[in-house]
Structures are given as C-alpha cells and as structure tokens.
Amino acid sequence: MMTTVLDTASLPPAERTAAWEETTALALVTTRFTFPEPERFGARIRAMELGAAQVSAIEYASLVSYRSPRLIRQSDPELYQLGLITSGRQNMNQAGRSASLRPGEIVLYDSSRPFEASIGASPEGAGSLLLQFPRHLMPLPDKVVAPLCGTALKGTAGIGHVFRQTLSTLAGPEAELTDGDRSRLGATVVDLAAAVIARHAEQTSALPPRSRMEALYHEVLAFIARNLRDPDLTPAAVAEAHCISTRSLHRMFQAHGSTVSDVIRRERMSRCRRDLADPLLRSTPVSVIGARWGCPRPADFTRAFRNATGMTPTAYRAAAQRRS
Image (cartoon, rainbow, N blue to C red; front, side):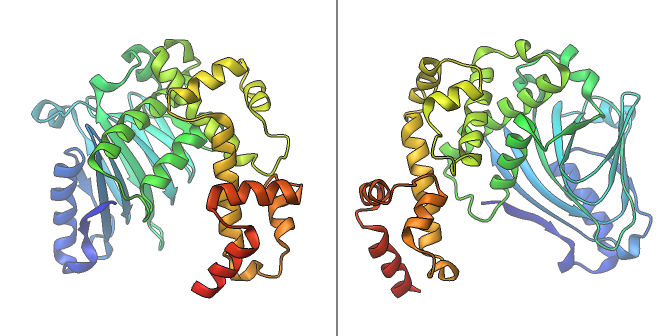
C-alpha cells in the first residue's frame, strides 16, 4: 500500500509551498518552483518503493517547476521518470520538445536533462501517477529513449493501456504487497515502461528478449480481461490475436507458473463471484450471469464454478446474501 509522504491539508497555508519543495527534493528530484497562487496552494504525495523503482501518486495545485543545468550539476540521481496524467492539463518542455498533456497521456522525462513543467490554474488542480527508476535499469539505449523525452505518449491502447492500468492498480487501495512482490513488480513495470517507449519509437526490436516477452505477457493478460465475455476465447484465439503460435503462448504462461486456460477460467469465475455477491443483481438468473462471462451452457458453468469455489453458483449467492 502507498504511504503518504506529504499532505499539505495538515499544514498552515504559509508553510505549504516550502513543505512541497522540501518533500519533492527528497522523494522525487530537486527542482525550483514558482507558485502563481501561493496562498491557495495545496498538494498531496503518496509513494511506494518497488525495489529500485518508485511509483508516486501526486495531486497539486497550480505551479511551474524548473530543473536547470546548474541543479543537475549539483544533484543528479540519474532517473528516468514517466508521468501518467490522471487529471488537469499539464505542460512539459525538455530537450527542445514541448507537450501539452491531457488525462490518459504519458510523458517521459530525464533527470539528467533540463526541463520545465507547469500546471495551469484550475479549481480542481491536477494529478499524476509517476514512475521513476535509475537510468541504468532502462533496457533500451539512450539513442532510442532521448528523442521521446518531453513528448506525449498515448496511454489509451495497446501496451500504453497496460502500463496505465498497472500504475493505477498499484496506486489503488487494494495494493497490499510484500517486499518480494514490490521488487518483482518494479522489474515488471520498468519492462512495461520500456515497451511503451519502444512502441512509440518504432523500435520494439531494440528491447531485450526478456523485456519483450514480459510486455507481451501483460498485453495478453489485458486482452483476456477485455474478452472474458466471449465464449470463443480460447488459447488458439488469444495466440492468433497476438500473431504468435499457440505453443509459444503456452511456453510464456508456463514461465509464469500458469496456463492460458487456467487464467481464462480463473478470471471468469472471479467476475461471476463478484456478480453473484452483488445485491443489485440478486434477481438476475444464475445462468444469465454465467453466460455474461463466457459460460453459455448452464451445466458447464455450474461444474466450473463448483470446481473453483466448492459451491454451486446458487449456494454461493445465498451464502453471500446471508453475509451481507
């Protein structure tokens, strides 16, 4: 779960901008700020370490942030940072490139290069999810990464959507992780970030095989989640959608200790359990819920559900209603 490292709501207004500057220098990178409305400034930072990487959820009011060559000479942690815009309009300038960013877009920047970022004045403020990690962990060469610094990367489709969903899940309230989980997820998120960059640079072949396979695995998981309602969702259909052989698909899942069919079945049963326990759906027939999640034959649905939970769908719904 994320830890709150700053919430200016608990501070007197006169102390909030100084607290923001001090905290961002420690938790992010050292920058200089100007505040168009310092008396109205407010911000919140929550952060989680993922091994050598870190993901932060940041909310802030209007400001302008500068990282100058002088600051870089004084202190440079040599980080890549990818910011997923979650609310508000934000602007980024780095290496002669400018981006006006909207919610859902991703911006890449480099602590070793000067930049200027700004958040315009609005009653709602702005927010972002920020992934940062040491430059040496990036599996792509700088000649691939550098041209995309200061540009907007799409986070609404393909691997960009997978990266966006992963950061959002990590920032959510249910992200209870062990130290081992966080370390493994850090490596995974860096691979996803590299895949987003490689895709936009049209340099996917520059990714090491391990990074390519990890990114593809998460793309496949996202594809399965989007298509659970399709009763024809099979390993062969998944492989065809990703232009790989069924054998390669099975090997990829075996490397993660599972099978494609097991994942499809587990995710379908998870959605069915959720709907069966929903009081708003108590009048919806059990067979309809099964068919909604890709199990159109009632007998097959009942058998699969009993195998997954030890109960029939009807008994599971009744137990859930008693608990509620």
